[in-house]
Image 1 (cartoon, rainbow over the protein chains, first blue to last red):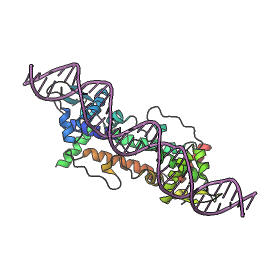
Image 2: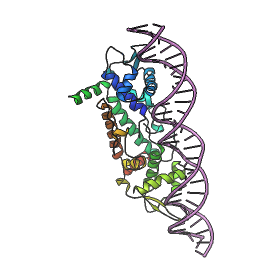
Image 3: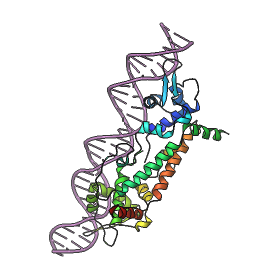
Image 4: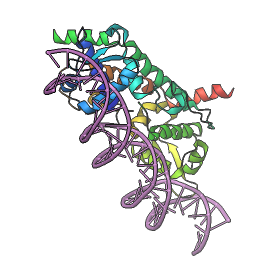
Length: 141
Length: 141
DNA sequence: TTTAAATCCAACTATTTTACTCGGGATTTA
DNA sequence: TAAATCCCGAGTAAAATAGTTGGATTTAAA
């Protein structure tokens, strides 16, 4: 029941962008450094986030990345889904295109995984980047 | 955010044993057949469940497996943990021996994963095999 | 007492996934 | 024009996954 580093690193990067949200784009290299991630690898991940419409890029010198929306309007669920795919503890309860399984037991186990899926989704969808920034403020003080 | 087949199959097998709970041990082959699992593979999994004290085995002809406790007193969380290890979306919030990470962001992302972990655990620990059997009854009628 | 039905166990393996790295091209600012 | 930066596709080593295989042991029943 583990997240891959894609989602893990991706959220770190997005949170970093939220903390540094403003006029100027943030170069990927500085995000990678602060968050302790290989910048070559992070490049791949942020490319996915860009294609998903969660960040905007500015090319050239002095370029970098900015959140595509205000931190208040980006939630963790979106970030994780874009990097890890639909939430699905097992395939047959995927949020998108669940696979069929015709088992003899009326698939009661399936309902267990559906409940797990929903509880994960509920947590992730309820937390925005702005929420996380507020939490960070609290910790600082 | 996926479970491996270990937990998936393991729960199916335990549920099968719960549905067939009684005097007689259930041979592994019949569980595997009903649940559509390779019996060689299931053998590995049930061996873990036995060592975890969740099932008892009876060797020899007419042998098989029985739940070590009544279905009411075995919950899904125990089964999953014994097969998949501690619940931990990411290592640094593992239920057991969380790994250290000294990042610059006060690890607010960490608190997100802790909440996910807790919500998964809450669901899994709240469902017993007996609950699942009752659900199965409802579906039948 | 033999046979067949079972569990038990350890080692092997093919495939897939993960977590990267690498090299080069395109774009923009100073 | 040089430097900083994003963009993109291909390659790769290591680990995890999902099994398979072969044989030893135990026990009930014929």
